[in-house]
Length: 225
Image 1: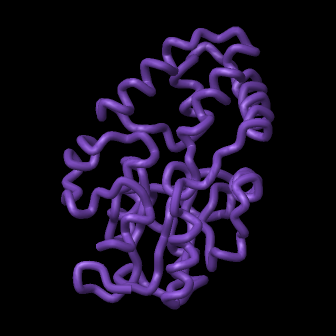
Image 2 (image 1 turned 90 degrees about the vertical axis):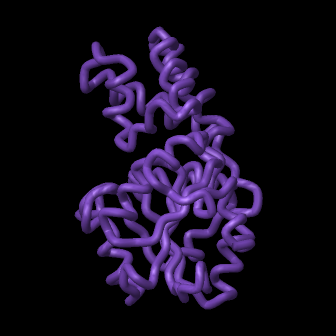
């Protein structure tokens, strides 16, 4: 596949907000868990408002994100919150973003390797894929939390993908919807394309120096470049 005159062989994709429509039920699921624990909702709603306005970035680490909303929670309470949140996700999962599955299939038709990089554990990611009707067989490699590799956005978090596919950083591109995704690509020497389907505003990526023709509404738009 050629992008801006460069022949690329490996597509590395973020999952939530890039392949899956996290915005569809994320707030609902989090509010449900918070309500069950009688937690104030204002800190979370304020964060989501600032996220949409480009004034903040999404937390990569789930536990740290919860702790930033409700600093008084103990480690045990955060684990309880996550358990309630995961239960809510089972009832209200995240559907695929329009055109994302078709884009994955098109990448494969073009002979490309396709990989995912996520801050979720493999079990969480696979449950979300199953609920969305996405086969893990579509992916040639995965960088997930808890696999012994550095976490995104750290340097080296994509090494497992390069090793599994046999491709190097200069043969790959990375598509993601958050500042953490931008930093992941930058730290690992990979071309980056931003998508706005995760709720992060265009201003965030412009501030980071992402060129306008590399900021897309959704993943499938990359096929039109």
